[in-house]
Picture 1 (cartoon, helix red, strand yellow):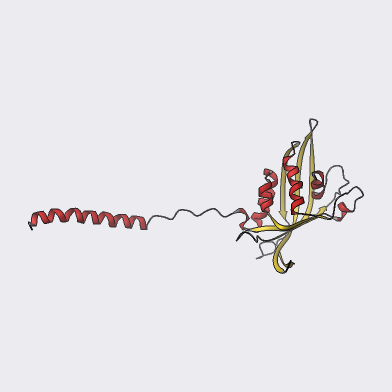
Picture 2: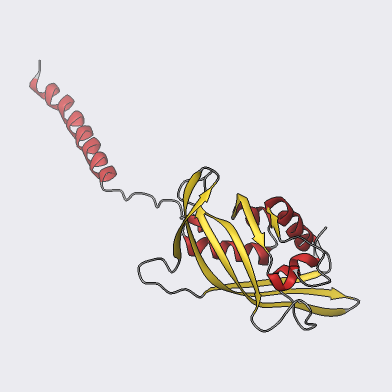
Length: 216
């Protein structure tokens, strides 16, 4: 073969090979795209915040996501022992969702604000107590803490604003979500009532008292 022709053929092949190698080297140093943001319920504190935010957004779906299927909300003794209390000692998931649907969908409700403040401070424990609970036939690890409950439900009735105010305490118990890996869910809430008020007070009510208002 003519050496001049051979050289002309070899040069494009060589250049093309170098471009391919350069491309491979460039791909190898390309940074990985960022992963998805962690779900709000991937931490205990995040689940509590997500739960409170569901109230403010009036988001029944998000509210329900925070609660396990065997969830229970327990009323304080001062409420269910009161002569005007016509409800039970506790409600389950289905009834609580009905109550919250009534609150979130009410046209008279202008605004809902909630803050849950963790009163527990234990080093190296994620600021939660740890307990073993028998749930059905299983022994489940439960994390719980005492929370301050600051809840305002603002209604507009006959051109007048009414603020149903809760300034109380509650024990909130969380466990791993049995239907979703690495997520947390609320198993039980024990409303402890208000520190200095009762259901009969005119200027405020309890967390349970607010729920009772929107009972269907």
